Structure formats: C-alpha cells, structure tokens
Length: 219
Length: 219
DNA sequence: AATAAATTTTAGACAAATCTAAAATAAATT
DNA sequence: AATTTATTTTAGATTTGTCTAAAATTTATT
Image (cartoon, rainbow over all chains, first blue to last red; front, side):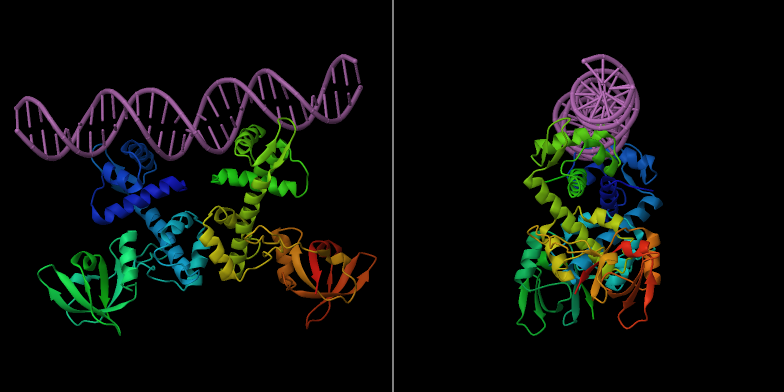
C-alpha cells in the first residue's frame, strides 16, 4: 500500500484525534489539518476506497486496522527522527517538529530500521511520547499528571500536554525540560497552584494551567 | 525562492547534464528524468518564468546563476545524506542513492547545517564526489585514473566510475574501499592488468576493467 | 414538532504535473 | 534545394489535491 504524503498526513491526523475521540468528525480533522471541510470530505472518500477508513457520510469516521497500522508506522518514523534531531544533531526539543513532519514521509524500511538501530532502539521521543516498535507495539506510558503527583514524591517530567510554543517558552524560562526531576512541596487550594522543587534549586510556583500540561513518572 | 520537489528534480537534472554539455536539450533531460519531452517543455516554461533557466524554444537551455546556486544546494544535501547513510547508518554505498533522492528535498537550513557539523564537514561523499560547502563552493577533485597512477606512488581511492552492484561486490571481495591506500607495483602490457599493494597486505592483481573503474588521488 | 443553527457533502472550478497525439521547427539526407 | 527524419512544442485530456458556494443533513432551540 503506497500512500501520498497528503494521505499520510490525513491518516496520521485521524490517528491522533482517535487517541481522544472514539469517532472523528469532518470539522475536527479540518481544524487539525488547516483545510476546509470540503477538502476533508474529498479525501475521506479516497481513504475509504483504499479501505483505510470506516466512513459513512454524515456519521463520522475512524481508521480500519490497516489504516491504524500505517498510521502507527508514520508516528514511529516521526518520533525516531525527533529523537535523532535532538540526540544527534543537538536540536532543541521545541525545534524538531516541523522537520520531523517532512522526514516522517520517507518510508524506506531499511532506512527506518537502520536509524532505529543507530539510535539504540529508543522507546520514548524527546517529548516523552512512546516510539512504536517495528511491529507497531507501543510501550504504555504510566504517566501521572503533575497536578496529581503526591507530595514529596520524586518524579521526572516525561511529557507535555501540548506543543504550543507559548508553553515551551514558559518551560524554557523556568528551566523545566523532559527528564527534569521534580517534587511537589505544597498545594494551594485557592487557585490550585503548586509549589515544586527542582533538584538543587529553590522552590518555585506553578499555576494550575501549567501543572496540568505536565506529565511525570515517579522514580 | 521555494521550489516543489519536482522543480528541484528538474534543476538538479539540468545541473548534472550541464557538467558534460554546455547547453542541454529537451530530449536529454526527458531521458534522464524518464518523462516525455512534452512534460519537459511544460516545466521549462515554469522554470524560465522563475528565472532559474535561460531558455529559448527549440534552442536548448541552461541554468541561470540563481538556478545553479539552488541546484548546488540540492547536490550538497544529497551528498551529505549519502555520507550520513554510509558512515552512520552502515548502508552500503550502492544502496544510498534512492533514499538520498528523498532526503535531499528537505530544505531546512538548520537541519543541513547541523547535519554537516555532526558529520564533521565531510568534503567528499561515499562515491568520492565532492560535497559543496554552505556557500556552494566545491573542492575540485584532482582525480587520476588508477590505470594512470605512476609506479610506487602512494595514493588513496577516492571515487568509482560506476555504481553497479557487480563492481561493489568485487571491491568488497578485494577489501577495496573509498579511502583505501594503494600503490601500483607493476604494469603488465599484455592485458593491461596491474599489480598493486594495499597497506600491510600482499600484492594483488587488478584487471584493466577494474583499474579503469577506480579513481585515486596521490597523498 | 417546527424552525434555526451547525455540520457535512456536493457541484464545479482551479493549479500542478503529467500524458498522448498532432503540429511546428530544425537537422540530416538524398 | 527539396525532402525525409528527428526534435521540440502545442493542444487538449487526466489525476491529485485544493478551494468556494450552494445544497443536504443533522443537531439544537424555541
């Protein structure tokens, strides 16, 4: 099954929306891909004809097993390249997305497997998201929202809930990164803000909004 | 100036043909790109409109300074990726071309510069072809056919005249690679074969056909 | 339940890149 | 020099992916 770059973008978009919604709507996908609903409908027909999509008009849609398998593989390539860009080429983790969007479309199996081996078969990308393995298997991530982390429990930032540049800017300012060690010291009920401590640093305050955008795993 | 992948393929093709022919013809390019002459003509008009091409109909064509600059940059990206694939991902040098054809279209300046630095600013790709630097400057290659190398002159294999897998197989068998040090010890007029020595190894014989497929530079 | 609002689809147009077949031009041959 | 042959261009069609505007359908509201 050979897909155009555009078809790949569509099924990847649907895959991501399906992580949150059982069934995806035309407008949701239009908004994610920044295209008009009319364009989405056109492509849905093509993907249905290729048996990658279960779709009845006006009824929403979701990927078939085959569609999902292909999507997972695109996600695999995307995250492997992100890992490469950060670990080998010294990109910042907030700079890699656009370039990985292009690299992910190169489908050579040999390339992907050799890249994976070169990188040491990493299981999480620089944002903390799991990298599907060659069979599409995804290491489940036992993530806790920072807002739910018990007091005085050492943990490590392992993923962020959004990739907006405003969030990344704020995290850079506060010197918080994937891998940063944190402990929650206090909770303030009034505004649900947290006082946290980074290793060897004075305590700082995180707003509810920020804490909810951060995921941790205990260590 | 943003080019589509297809436009990039066209100007890269023209660039390569210009290395041999002063002015390029529609049929030459059609044959190189495996497209019909009609398609070539269509694209020539677009490239002329973008001022990348000097073209008068029925009169052949060649790149403008701007077109050449862009082409050299594509060649730079292609050869950097080939170097990466061979040196880092352990591809064989006969396997890299197709994948590099895809990777070369990713234009991110940051990516290319960081890749170049990661690779240690290599000046020649795995086939011995020069990699243009960031300003488009190409290290001229003073290559000598192995058959013309004077006796007892230390030299280094720097390029091969063909990328056929049968040649690669033979070179692998004889443990000859890009970078291998050689000296010609004897020449046999009867069949124009050579006796050569690789560093710390007993002398071996190369046929005329093989020697002519190898290029060296003295060291 | 009828109407208004939102969502989704269709119809028709357009740009990019390609093709085939026919016409125009240039080059080669008699 | 006239004619044949080869090359190149044009004309018109096709595919992919996109759009706008209008129509169809579903959902929400009075």
